[in-house]
Length: 195
Image (tube, rainbow, N blue to C red; front, side, top):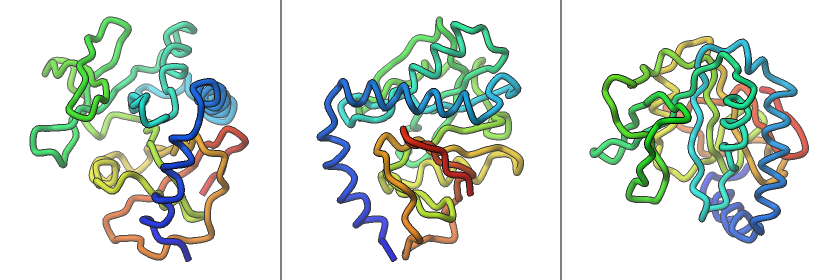
């Protein structure tokens, strides 16, 4: 069995070693996987994380811009880390939304109370990760932001991990916590894993 810390230590340097061209190509493949395997146009709300480019995270702007370019009826929400450093609020993301970099350099929508989106609204959530297992348990950065958020979502919401590394899920994580919320699927550049 693998531990989250061991998988995190293995994945981060491999991801940091990706060239900008590799990030762009793999992000395009992730976007294609999402639109090919999920009913994006049927969702009312899609929650999407905005990428931290210096960490070679998947470029979710390809997904966002495709939704806007094709005028799909799905509305977008993106997270904003709160001052307590442990919780998220969520705000509508449109082509006119002003973005502000947070303390980690992650772009976030301006926190306009009129555009706040409740955790129960998204039909699907795109989740950042470094690795996952065959039960859908994920390895993130270790802050627990997404587990706390996903626990507040509707029971029928679909949680989809995006892994820019083309890794298959490991058999099992040894250190799953009771507060960990499993994914329903994980996209890699080369395939889709459903749990």
